[in-house]
Image (cartoon, rainbow, N blue to C red; front, top):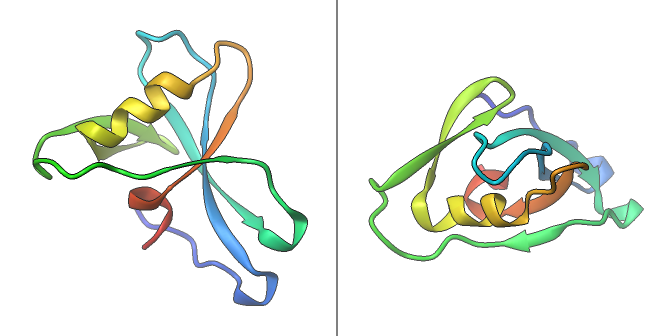
Length: 95
């Protein structure tokens, strides 16, 4: 997966947008750029240490993207059944 560059003049960060789904559905997401100047609303999470080879996939803009099992639990638990949820996850949103 190739991340699009951030625009430093806009004070941008990447946000992981989790699309709605049932708890047992595959996790489908996309990367959004948001300017901190606009005070975007999102939840923040960080991966916990563990075996980096123990991963679970998400669909990121149609591409399989591995998350460590410890981080994968966050979008799984935070996902809504009806609306997109925005999170900042260091392992995904930082190059």
